[in-house]
Structure formats: C-alpha cells, structure tokens
Image 1 (cartoon, rainbow, N blue to C red):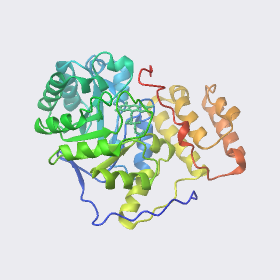
Image 2 (spheres, rainbow, N blue to C red):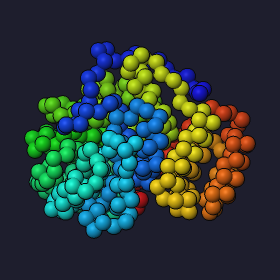
Image 3 (cartoon, rainbow, N blue to C red):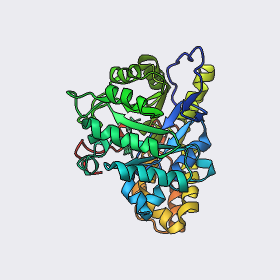
Image 4 (cartoon, helix red, strand yellow):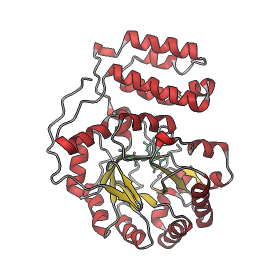
Length: 366
Ligand SMILES: Cc1cc2nc3c(=O)[nH]c(=O)nc-3n(C[C@H](O)[C@H](O)[C@H](O)COP(=O)(O)O)c2cc1C
C-alpha cells in the first residue's frame, strides 16, 4: 500500500486502558459511527476485516417499525458472527415503544448494546420529538431513556449532540443525568442541531460532557479524518474513545491506523487505488451473500458511487454503475475501472473529504 505521508503524532503514554461499555470490553477505543445508508452489514464486515474497530453501530432504526417487524427494519439489524461486537441504534419518542423495541432486540436478535439516537437533526425524525428534539425535553427524555435502561440487561448507550442550538447546550446536563439512571456510555457529536453538519466541531463542548460524568466513558465524535485529528480530540477533551463516520468512508483503514499509532507511534498508509477496489469487491460479495445478486447490484449503487468518487474514477464510468442490472454488467464495469484507473493517473488517491454526502441542513429530508 502507498499513500500520502501524514504528520507524525506521538503515541499516548501510558497506553490507554481497555474501553468498557457496561459489561462489554472493547478491543479498541475507535468506533464506527452510524451513517444511515452506508453503515450496513456489508460495510461493517469490510471494516471489521480491515481491523481496529472496537464497535460498529447499525443505521438508526425506527423503534415502531422494529416492533411491527417491518422488513426494512429487520434488514437494518441483520448481522452475523463476523459483525460483532454490534450496537443497534434505535429512535422514537414514545417511551413504551422504544423500551419494547429494546426488549425485543435483547430477546430475539444478536447484538451487544442498544444505542438511543438523540442526535438526528432531520426534520422527519426531530419533528416527532425523536432524535435531536429529545435534547429540548428534559423530563420526557430522561423517562424514555430510564425505561429503556430498565427494560434490558444489555448496556444502553446514548448518542447526542451538544444541544438544540447555541443557546441551549444541554449535553453536559443530560450526560450527568444519564449516568445516574444507568446509561453505560455517551457518544457526543460536537455540534448542535442548529448547526446540522456545518461549522466546526467544538472540542470545548465535548470536554464539558467528559467533565460532567463520573465514571462512564464518553466517546467524542465529529470531523475525525486522520490519526492526528483523533489524537487531538482525545488530548483536548479527555474523551475515552472516538467514533468516526465520514472519515471511515473516506479511509476505512483509519481504525487499524489508530491502533497501530497507539502501540508504536507510527502507522501504515491507507489503501491505494487497487486496495480500495479489492475492498469494494469484498463488500459487494458480502452484500450478494446477504441479498442475492439482483438486489445487491441495485442496493450497492449508493455505496459504489462513494467508493469510486473517493478513488477518483471519472464521472462517466461512475455513472455506469447506476444503470447496471446484472452480475455480468457489474463485472464488465468493474473491469473498465480496473483498466482505466483513477483520473490524473495516480493510483494512490487521497480521498476528497468534502465529497462525503451530508444532509443539506438541519431541516433536510434525508
Ligand atoms: C449520511 C449520514 C448519515 C448519518 N446517519 C446517522 C444515524 O443513522 N444515526 C446517528 O446517530 N448519526 C448519524 N449520522 C451522524 C454521524 O454518526 C456523525 O455523528 C456525524 O457525521 C459526525 O461525525 P463524522 O464527522 O465522523 O462523520 C449520519 C451522518 C451522515 C453524514
């Protein structure tokens, strides 16, 4: 593998102790954030194979849909032994429904922890009082989370933002209250709902959440793209681990790099063009295994678009994949990608982070 040379970053001394989330002991403190539409079973398996990820989380799943056993919800929580440990993220605004969904997960499905979404800024979810809207309702939110914690033996975690807007930075208050009612860990995305995905992550805001709890781990999140970003977040905020979303799409090797850094202070470069192509095909094979070829070809369109963009494959060739219907057409298009390689004749492209899709603003419909 070859790749851009990164700035050296001193390894942490003493080495950090293992990250525990309730009864769960994680192999690393580097976690994959949920990215709806991307962090599905096939991607998580690919990430686990590359190594270094301590815990992956599913896309957010509607608690009501789960209870109704809607096929879409059941597909989102599909897993396999290679996909562990796994957190399933649920959302909803009715305490009984969310608690019942957690109970159903614990009794009938394979998972290691339940994560409650309190960060989603999207109108469809927040308008109903779920996602980031929970950051505005203290009593109702505490009751909901308490009901979920009491419903299951599994560790329950919460993923939230700093607050609804800059006038109401409620995350430290919630973190302290959640610890008291038995939440096992908090993930904090260092932006408000109002910010959506714009502006900079506030390390100061994350630090306040770390300072608000006594013993439970706080996982910092937002804008980590490389080892130096993670090291900085850990150093400045004192967080116990970091969760990486878009940075893992751009560089799926980032978890392994972080573990290498922690042990030795140096790390291998991210995969080059050929490594990314191999990874893409590996993920596609996992998808075929799960869904069969016909559905896999169609449902891989979103993911492959991202892969090929990050590999700097020319637009015309990328778009061919949006029309492919059969394995034969898929293989032929892949062969073209292999032969043509990336634009600008570089086989070690640095993925363009700005190209990672995000909802356009806080009110975007995902
Ligand atoms: C396309 C997309 C989908 C997302 N889906 C979810 C989700 O299902 N649940 C959730 O808690 N956060 C979701 N997020 C937020 C991310 O988990 C993460 O908090 C945010 O992107 C900041 O971290 P990053 O800079 O490492 O990506 C999503 C973000 C993006 C861009």
